[in-house]
Length: 81
Image (cartoon, rainbow, N blue to C red; front, side, top):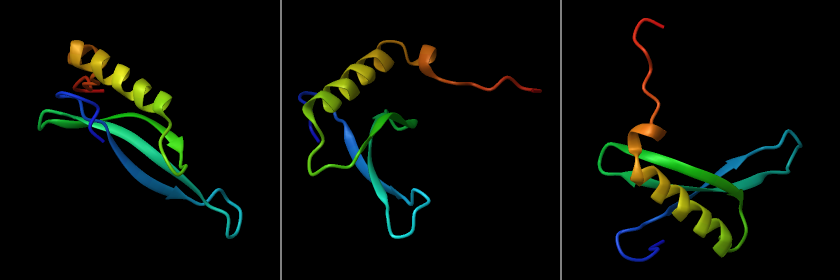
């Protein structure tokens, strides 16, 4: 989903079985790529026919926040722990 200019938010669909027989919930996972280093998950929403504009805007704002300071939003494990 092209969100204008260089911004691109991607949606993927994931399924899970909520513990009830024959009843499943599908989620849309909104994520973006940080260069060729990582895929960054913004958030997920319950699948509808179309991702609401407010959820796309939320993902765009989170992407911009990440891009403004990637090291602040990146987990790097401490060696020896």
